[in-house]
Length: 213
Image (cartoon, rainbow, N blue to C red; front, side, top):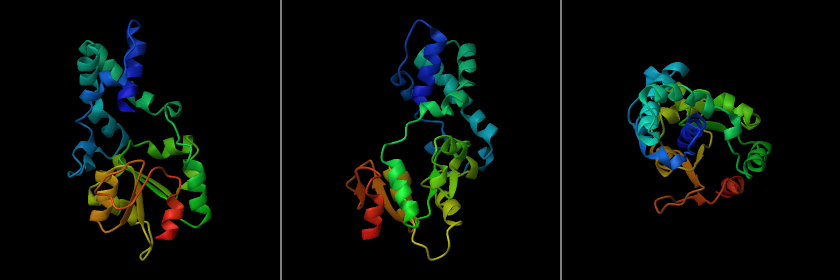
């Protein structure tokens, strides 16, 4: 998503060249809060501070990956926030609505806990998914990124004691291992790994799996 946002903006600004996400991907591998998840980022837990912290990352990516002059790169970097938050740029997997609807109908309470942007709750609502979730928690507003224990605590504090809690995610490190390390159950979806005990190819089947375990 990030590299594609930069490619979109660069292509529109250049006019003579079509950029791809691969042009910028190598320059976006550091600098985001989740690239140092062992550290708390409490100083960034408001929207403007969070985005301002990434401005230099985007600027350097436009310079190095797109060859833009610094002043042009700076102006493009300021547009990334709006580009990223455009709901038209997001895709919902075909199994999402059916599986989440089933989960809700069977009494499961769903919480999103994501390493994401401050505007995640609004984005979830714009994508028509908010009715499935009791709460939407973004790392950008709590100051902790998964797999930091503080991220999971931010979610579990809203769950009644004694409840069964299962983390469903597509990252072995952030989602699966992070949950296991704080004593939660976990299921890896849309990914496979030899170190993951419970895995599913997609979100479809998650509810049936949980009901059988």
